[in-house]
Image (cartoon, rainbow, N blue to C red; front, side, top):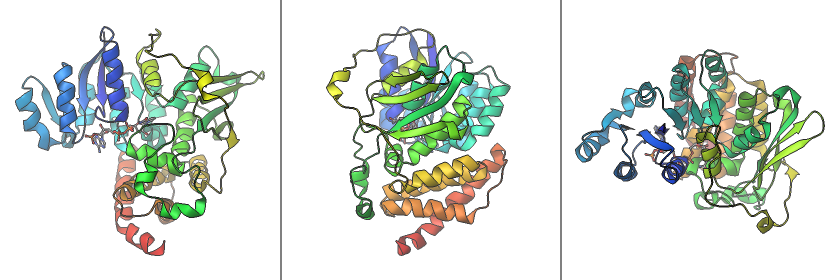
Length: 385
Ligand SMILES: NC(=O)c1ccc[n+]([C@@H]2O[C@H](COP(=O)([O-])OP(=O)(O)OC[C@H]3O[C@@H](n4cnc5c(N)ncnc54)[C@H](OP(=O)(O)O)[C@@H]3O)[C@@H](O)[C@H]2O)c1
């Protein structure tokens, strides 16, 4: 029985991971869960699973403990996400948190030699160099759950990375792919949250509409597969049927095909070397024609900016991510317009100098500065737009 410590259990990925655990009760069990404030969902999960540990904002302690006295409650404020991984050395950590809050627990898990099943893309975006270094001194394995990287991992099985010429990931184009760029100034939160192919959490759905999500995935691919940026490409592919492709040196190209269903990469990461039976079969014929095109850098200007920042590397990637997290939240709270997201990220990159190297402590301190800068700066951007 594989025990799972599920960080971000109440979110979109967290809920789908629980679906998989419930589909295969003989193979997987929940050992610990985390959330921030969604106490209703946490109580629902506890009613169906014998979890030993719950990490949440401290204000929910009494509610959880009175309903489930046997559960150990750890407050988020007491570094709960990091301390969760100290329990149950045999358990795997499934990180489904949103945002760079996911980095410290991933690092802590790797330092303890635990395998990490990683949906939280911001971990590698901001902490790629730190994660890479930690993995050099650890027995743990990092297994991606993002659909594109899970696809690449399947295509790479049994092959040598030195035989790879290029990695390709695909992009749906997000909620505004059929909207003229001039009309984006009027884009509403409700429209941004209507993704054409996937049902995901709010932040990633907005990142998908700005194409920042694809920048993040290129950075993830760079660190996961140790591939230089110039050999990673993203293609616009409206149907989201092919998630990733590997071009080998000898001209062979392997593509991973499947539905827009995150439960497949979640199961792939959880199942280890076995192959379990997924409940439904994919019907490629239902999709008809598949289309592919390069990403238009004028149309998706944040993609162009973000990939340039990624290629340069250093602390600017952290600046970009923190500014993006704050700006997306401001947009979701209807404080700024859709186009202000990019304007704020550009301002932050102009304001903060880049440095080549950083530690976890300097990274976290820098993030706090950037977040505070955006919270003060957004009023000015608003007036300009
Ligand atoms: N959704 C997808 O289909 C998908 C696909 C590929 C990759 N990903 C990546 O997977 C990650 C999770 O995405 P998601 O869509 O599942 O996000 P989500 O639905 O917003 O869920 C986020 C989870 O993290 C918790 N959380 C949020 N902020 C927190 C904080 N500051 N401290 C502690 N916990 C916090 C939430 O708890 P509460 O519910 O209590 O707020 C929730 O459990 C992201 O990095 C995303 O880019 C998602």
